[in-house]
Image 1: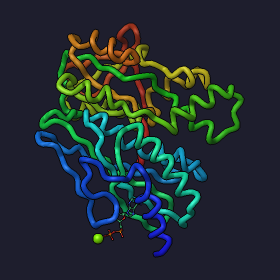
Image 2 (image 1 turned 90 degrees about the vertical axis):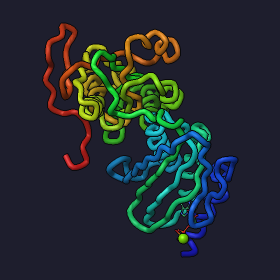
Image 3 (image 1 turned 30 degrees about the vertical axis):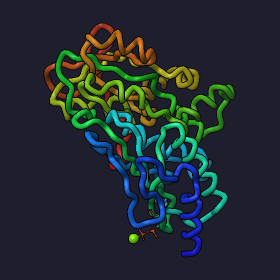
Image 4 (image 1 turned 180 degrees about the horizontal axis):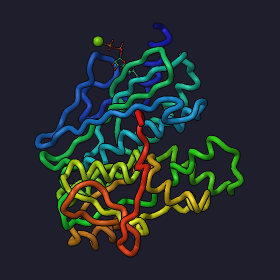
Length: 317
Ligand code: ADP
Ligand code: MG
């Protein structure tokens, strides 16, 4: 129990866990107390990262801290929310102080980048498992949902896909790739960039929005289902991450379509916003459109229907 007290101290004393104008009570009491500005709603999301499932054993704790928080904050971006606070449910086989300090520095780096603070959590003994609940604020009624796509809108992705999925190969095999390419793949996997500015820009404009965590096809199917429309993805327009192509040109498209972990945003927008979008977010690419119907269509550059078997990662698949 004394060891758990030590863990709490590591987090409690960290810069990114200190109160601010919106955080009245942070770590140290039964509950944190947060001020939500008038006219705002709280956006709340939880993500778990398990050893062997979401990251390899013996992963660098600094990178793990960065990634765990980035993955959770990415959901806030998809809601159009401004990050406020997060809690950390940590299960650890044994309390290794050096490991925890390094993990905390990783959390700190991402917390600083995303302007979010740690306000509490829970610590238990068990297999390594990192659970993060992130909270953000969004103006009343302006939260972005998966259910708002309508026929006639265009479908966009916020940036190139496939690099994080390609990185998984580096964990399994020795690689002959250049050091530069390897680093780009590892960065994509370990340091995804939550698309907060884009998410906030999309408020009041986008039909449906979500972040791509399981795979483009799988996540696009979620928007189609929740919105009661059909999404058509033009395969040749899907932007492939350069490092994924350098890693394996024959696999890159497959990684982009079905590999998860890139944490780009997938969203629908009326054509009237396209020019403004491309000006403000030049990385965004139109990859298809929304039409009446249901489910997902994948087509080639002639408009011919393509078949696919796998859509993305499924935990109970
Ligand atoms: P309780 O038993 O009332 O839930 P705990 O003794 O578990 O409280 O925790 C004491 C304080 O430490 C609480 O404010 C809690 O939020 C915080 N805390 C515990 N574990 C963590 C953690 N892993 N990260 C951040 N804060 C933590
Ligand atoms: Mg209590």
